[in-house]
Image 1 (cartoon, rainbow, N blue to C red):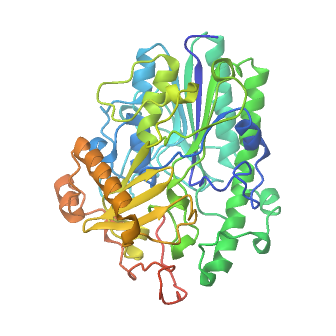
Image 2 (image 1 turned 135 degrees about the vertical axis):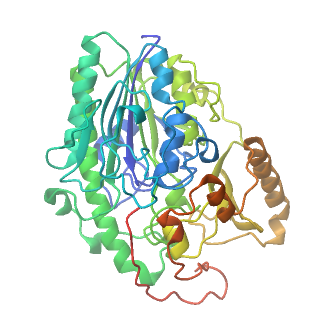
Image 3 (image 1 turned 90 degrees about the vertical axis):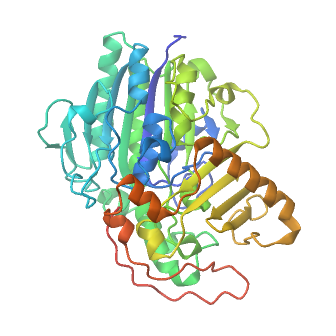
Amino acid sequence: MSDRPNVLLILVDEWRAQATGFAGDANVRTPHLDRLAAESVVCDQAVSGSPVCCPYRGSLLTGQYPLRHGVIINDVELAPDSPSIARDFSAAGYETAWIGKWHLFGSPGGACERRDHPVPRSHQMGFHRWLGSECSHDYWHSPYNDTDDQTLCHWEGYDAFAQSRAALDWMIAAKRRRQPFLACLSLAAPHFPLFTAPQTYRDRFRAENMRLRPNVPAVFADQARKELAGLSAHCAALDDCLGELLQGLAVAGLEDDTVVVFTSDHGNQHHSHGLNFKLFPFEESVRVPFLVRWPAGLGRSARVCAAPVDAPDMLPSLAGLCGVRAHAACEGQDWSPAWRGAAVAADAAALMLVPVPITAMRWHGFPAWRALRTARHTLVLDRQGPFLFYDNQTDPFQMRNLAGDPTVAGVRADLERRLWQRLDRLGDGFANPDDLLRQRGLAHYHETQAPVVRRWNDPWAPGASPLAPEAWTFQAP
């Protein structure tokens, strides 16, 4: 076993934790992912603490929470001199590569104007090889530029397959150079548009066969089933990409000494609680799959780990596993001891937050929020105080809001105290979102000005009125 294992980090986009075969979802077919889970540490409490593309990615790269790295909404530019996982691993002698969706070059005009631009070398955060694009979900005409070259090229066919093969080629080349490597493969699917997977995969899934979570209101059932069929098709295609990658690592002799991490930047409501898209503090948006396999260091037996891993924890945890020194400004927690078998504290908790309502939050009239999630409870605050409170063990679909229940007042108060302690340590005073936008120079961003269509009301609250169909206008985040 090398004292410096290789790392392959596979990041997919908008794949919620519930939508995997190993998690028991009857809608999806993920045999390769299921086999990986059978050989992995499965972090079944992993979260996307900021369940939206850019803030999560900023935290993954820097090991910091959004209010520190500055990417608090979509399309904010991550400062090019920020600390990064690539810089920390490079300093330890690793070759590094990023392949796929980036979404951290930003669009300072606030209107997504850089999404189809090449990302300059100055903004590639220290990766030695870079085959990426700022943000595209046109999976059949997907652009990228290559490191120093500012020419936009396009991946052949459905981009996830071409990107996976490029990642495998690069890893094999790094092995020939006898260098440990960190390869980050960022696949943009299964993010919407949901009906653009290869036809052979779409033919496998029919809307009428999709099973809904109990917290999808009946009025949204037909649309939710259509979305889940499209999601399942993308997931099946990505599962085959994963199969090719794992087989390639085995053939190349890289399997035993390569840490493979599989996770997602966030989930999607798919109409649970009458909501769509991400951004919300519910399990469908915040829970993500998280697998860690390293045969030489962690063995090949499946093991469940209760560590509430979040994006800021990725850098210090992988650094800890590989003997790399994480930078001093890192705010995340090193969970590598737990991956190796150390006990996780019973009260371990993830801090989650969306400090500014954008797009779907505004359409639904949902406030800015901060939350603490333990294995047992989720407590969500808005600026007025406790807003949502769930017992995730007795109410896994979060259909009984206990925020006003006097019988659990003591537990709720304790979690609120702990949440404010976490916020105080980060210097987060739960600022007014409008003030925060003005202070950060972001008030002109169009996602912050999406119309408020209606105020969200809990469809499961006692006496709640039945939801009526909504005609949503939509601008892709």
